[in-house]
Image (cartoon, rainbow, N blue to C red):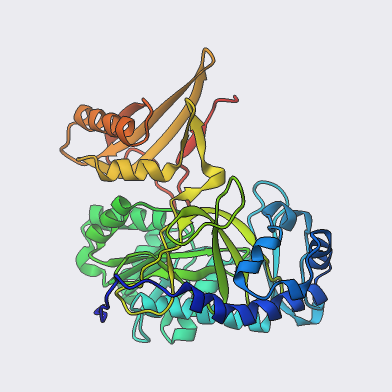
Length: 427
């Protein structure tokens, strides 16, 4: 999609942005204090009154909201409206305990659909597109959220849901799908299937929108090459509406987020202190317009950076970097902290390495052992790829790892999210 470029050496006026957000923030905190027993108690314990929070900078006085608090509030402990105003609920998977139940008002549903429609439009989707929605439906936010955005934009939604690759490809070819939505893992699986079957000429895809998991530039390049499409990284969390709170634009410089509905802070995950734009840290989100379950300073655990520069695409919305990883996904090996995203960077710089990998951690004789399995491109020497990868890991991450290169397609593919880290040190 052609975009009008502007000078990206110009920096964002964050003071102006924070001033624009401050009025909504003040109103939201007063509403939250009045309507949410959870937050009223939380703020009282911290000695913070609503009138103390007038500017974004004042948020540093406010204690964080954590995922464990949301779980402890199951089912409706953080709801801030009466039952009769709730028109829908969604929830997290609950794989690590009680799920998080998120209530939505009619306005919440509308705002979410509008943010999702903005994402579609930024990716170049138009009312003439046919959009295949492969994420799951039900209590999970993804499927219905994407469908609402597609319909708000006026495009044709094809709500296939997850799985049944044979049927997905049949629908894609017969209906003439032009936009594919799903996890990046499923995008890769479909791309490889289309390539393997030699049916690219029957497929009319031009755009892929993928989210729900961190994915590498190398995976992105593989999907784009196999399908001859442009791909977009969409961002979101179940706790904060769902997917659609940000997306990268055709310039692919970072993730634009909807600052009229959300405040993004970056903090030092160790100290909890705000860090300035341009500094990597943990993303903390405050909702400005959410009604059913507004969140004040929610710790996402996602590691990113608030970008200083204006995007050359011309969008007025600020950006964060694509997420590097999560603070709770960090693994410590031989005294070194490692994010899986760092392995992505190593693979990108290693000739012959594909995007797919696994990290296997074991402990032998009280010593940690790390084995990294990586896929190699067809025709490349497995020994050479593993050797180069091992050298780059030592140079870029600072550890000595065992590396095993395997033929492309050896590691498992997923219709949902791909599991990459297997920590067996406590077994």
